[in-house]
Length: 269
Ligand SMILES: NC(=O)c1ccc[n+]([C@@H]2O[C@H](COP(=O)([O-])OP(=O)(O)OC[C@H]3O[C@@H](n4cnc5c(N)ncnc54)[C@H](OP(=O)(O)O)[C@@H]3O)[C@@H](O)[C@H]2O)c1
Image (cartoon, rainbow, N blue to C red; front, side, top):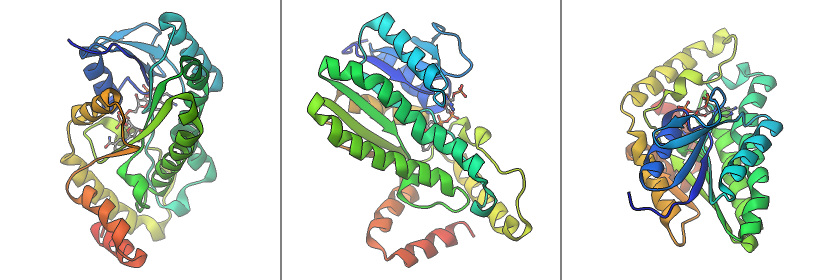
């Protein structure tokens, strides 16, 4: 049970990767708070404390962070983990549906950063970890707004890192590949798929479903986050992916754009 006893807030601690991070970090001596939309403040789960929070709601975020600061008097680490998936041909995704995704995956993280920055600045230190995705490296077909949201969070984090370095605050992005969580169940979907897009969409979802079957234990991601939290000088980004996902990130950097797009297209055929 050795640990440095940092005060850590993890959004989306009720499920999947967030739950695994909460468990591991609490087991290693940190004071961990996880959030969920349906939990009661103070509920105990695997040694961590849950707080009710909807990251799409300014007041809810402000209240949740204030509750944590009231209990602990400080916040050492924020992990922006809560997020949603989306699936569907881009042509069939309404701006309203895309807006819901971006409001969670991008503006949700922004709300949390705004809420914790004053306390971290006053402390003269703090660490913000944004959980992005391998999907942020390229535009995944039929999950375009998911890729866009994670790419946006990457660029947001880069900019924020430069702005807050002078206050002693560090910003890191952690980019998971596929992990075994219920994320697919909560993916946003359009009400209807246009007939022209149906065959390509169905085939891509079959391929995606097959690959999720082989996905990894969320605790592996939690181990990386634990390492980042313990590092004296963490890197700006950590890619936590294997096999074809890891290689794809490298190929995206070196292949001509059209060649890379053909390769992605073939994968989902
Ligand atoms: N699983 C993967 O393979 C994978 C790969 C790359 C990146 N990621 C990223 O990792 C993060 C966690 O995903 P996961 O796989 O663990 O998914 P998950 O099991 O579906 O968990 C998502 C979490 O986000 C929370 N959440 C969603 N909307 C919220 C909102 N408006 N306010 C507050 N909390 C909200 C959920 O809490 P409630 O529903 O209880 O409120 C839940 O705890 C996401 O950002 C995801 O994009 C996952």
